[in-house]
Length: 133
Image (tube, rainbow, N blue to C red; front, side):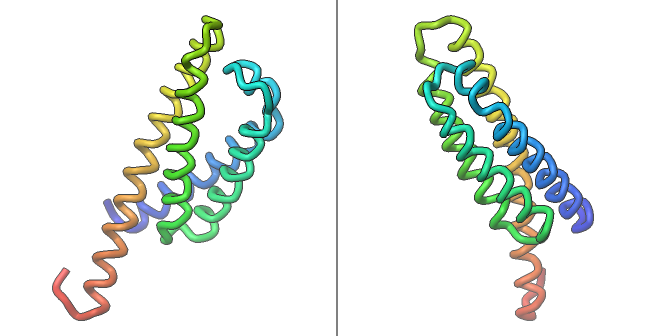
């Protein structure tokens, strides 16, 4: 994957993250209720994280840290949704399972992008140190 393609991927992830963060912030109560979480705080915190990491990715699409932070957030989201998937309410359990599936797909994209960024960093540092790439 070319450097320009990696930059475009990371920028797209960043803008998507900002959009998801804004959606989570506006819909926090409804989303929390839908999966059986009593407080919307978890969704508000996730929204802030999404917006911050998205802004980082858009501002610096060649740096790995915004995508690494997104990946860490994905793990937290999966754990949170996984815990709520055990609820006895069938519709909330289904909603949580759908959420787990969506976040799992996002996690795969984030992991792919992070791998590409880290490969790019490694290749760049080998070239700048005089080693063969």
